[in-house]
Image 1 (tube, rainbow, N blue to C red):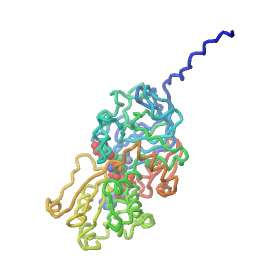
Image 2: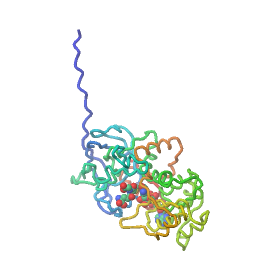
Image 3: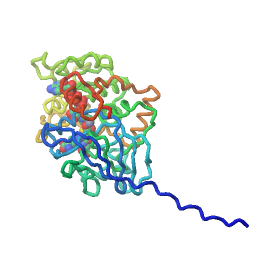
Length: 393
Ligand code: NAD
Ligand code: AHE
Ligand code: ZN
């Protein structure tokens, strides 16, 4: 009788160790420098990922420029990326090494005790929002240290994608179909998904509704694209930069207006242009300017108009209007990430893009190579000719 040899013990995967890589570190307001950083292994419930490409969003600029009341320095910014899972911490089940993911700054814990994840009304899962706003991981500590002096670097929006490697909470990782071009996938990490969702989820624009969009950057143009797709008409685009008008009309704007061409408040100009003469069924702010938000609200239709705030206003800024605007039927809401439940929605948006139902290539106006070229991407975004600048790492 042949003696059964005991089977060899299972070989545990190598325990991940520190990774030293390049990152753009924000040391202070508008002080962004390429450094070597040490990225610690993922702890329980965390995932370490290799960033393959990152798109710059205006919110990165807003924080780098010192306008974010939660802004911390030194920090690694960035939140619109495509990444590959490098290692996972204890208990991680939804992703594995080698998976392609898009980080989500609005996580989705999916826990039965999360009244937000269990509600169809919102995507605002608060599971890690407290620590995220303090620039640390859920256990209150950072995974980033500066190689030169071992000082701690803060995380940003739970993403920190201005780095070749970063660590995310598992609930912030949306696993996607890897066959989508990485540069297209990253757009669903923030701006494009937000603009589409503002129309389809938050405002729930109906066919034949009239729409006015203030701000024709990538987010506002995604609003235009979504409004066109749902059959809205007319769609008016408003921007102080007329260079945006051509693409805005290609994507669905029936008219574009430059506030600089008018000496009247824009709400009066728009109401005069509106189909009923009483304003627009849906208006959107994608500028972050609180004066524009007032115009957008007051251009909403008497009796039923809904204004949606997408723009992020600087610390201390507030919106104002007469209560009469609400008494006469106007409503105002806002959207975070377009209302998408991150881990469910991003894979769905990627599948729709792969089927050709959602076009995104036109949003990429600049491409750069290497994390250090993030500075060139920032310059491009400031130039006014840029919608999304994608940096391939
Ligand atoms: P962007 O800077 O590329 O675009 C803003 C556009 O607004 C530009 O075309 C600019 O010319 C225009 N603009 C500026 N001032 C104006 C004015 N007074 N009147 C008319 N147009 C004006 O920014 P983006 O990446 O498209 O993002 C737009 C806004 O949305 C930013 O505030 C960003 O922080 C915010 N954002 C919010 C979310 C969210 O989840 N709520 C997600 C992404 C971005
Ligand atoms: N820390 C900022 C938050 C600004 C803000 O509103 N952020 C948006 C995302 S912008 C992405 O480009 C958001 O979704 N916020 C929801 C949240 O939970 O922060 C400030 O101004 O305080
Ligand atoms: Zn963003």
